[in-house]
Amino acid sequence: MSDDYAARQDRPQDQVRSRLGAHPLPGGQETRFRVWSTRAQQVAVRVNGERHLMEALPGAYFELVLPVGAGSRYLFELDGQPTPDPYARFLPDGVHAEAEVVDLGAYRWQHTDWNGRPLPECVFYELHVGTFTPEGTLRAAQERLPYLRDLGVTAVQLMPLAAFPGGRGWGYDGVAMYAPFAPYGRPEDLMAFVDAAHGLGLAVFLDVVYNHFGPDGNYLLSYSPSYFTDRFHTAWGQGLDYAEEHMRRYITGNARMWLQDYRLDGLRLDATAAMQDDSEVHILRELAREVHALGGHHVLLAEDHRNEPSLVTEDGLDGIWVDDFHHEVRVTLTDEQEGYYGGSGAARPNWRRSSTAAGSTRGSSGT
View 1 (tube, rainbow, N blue to C red):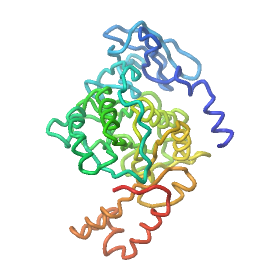
View 2 (view 1 turned 180 degrees about the horizontal axis):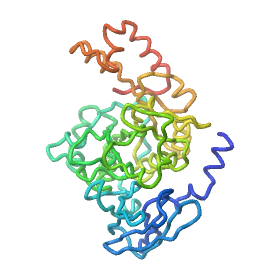
View 3 (view 1 turned 180 degrees about the vertical axis):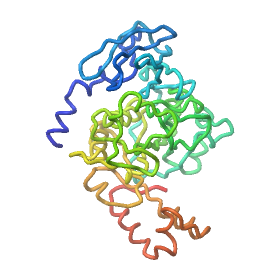
View 4 (view 1 turned 90 degrees about the vertical axis):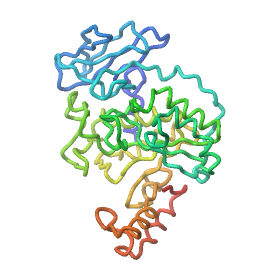
């Protein structure tokens, strides 16, 4: 661990009390609202319809503690412009509307003796909450967990849950990374799903997208252009500037939230080849350090078409989510050669070589 990395972990802004967004204080009678904005000269928070001016602090921070608790609805105002909270823990009416104050520590866990499942024991089932049941909710999916157990599944990998606009989607255009997609259910519904899965001996992983934001509903830019950069570009939009401390903390804090507050067993990192970073410590390496520092059996898997062993041997991730088998079958059946399918099937006769490279990493791969 570099001295720079260790020092960053000890800084006050990395402590719970300084997290951005809305966080209930001990006792549940007060909530701290905190904003970082390099654009706004004045910031206010509108809570349950009442406007409150926030105190300006050094470093472009704005903060206010109010006597409100979980369940309160709020919206920030940047120089008078109503602006949703990109750090919201729940957006019940969608990504363009008010957020709800949520106490993520209020859920009473039933299966507290769960110790995780080692990666070599994981037989993955990739689950889209919106299509897995006719209801398309976490509660309905929870009722079907015994079916997955009886099928022989040992690990459920949920497709992305971060809030995105509209009522349907695959989840890869998320814009509010801390808020579970409201049509699927509330935060406590996700906790109940994880809790029930653990009771059945099933690990639960989550697909997270840290390489881009969706095109509609991304309000980070309204707070500061520094979250993004022109140094990098992705196939899906403007590059994230992981060298910017707040963007870096947005990503690492999000991973910690899913693993600590929701007690997920691991994360599948979508398209890690698109997570370009020119920092001294690459964002993937820092993610691995922070996640493994949590203890337990938390697992980080890189979905990466390069099949680079260094993702494990150098960056410290636990394995690579290898899509080669899926691509080979698709090309064989459809003759599709567009995009990354161009490297599969007849177009790449030596495909086994890349599979061997992935297999050389510790842990098992999933498809």
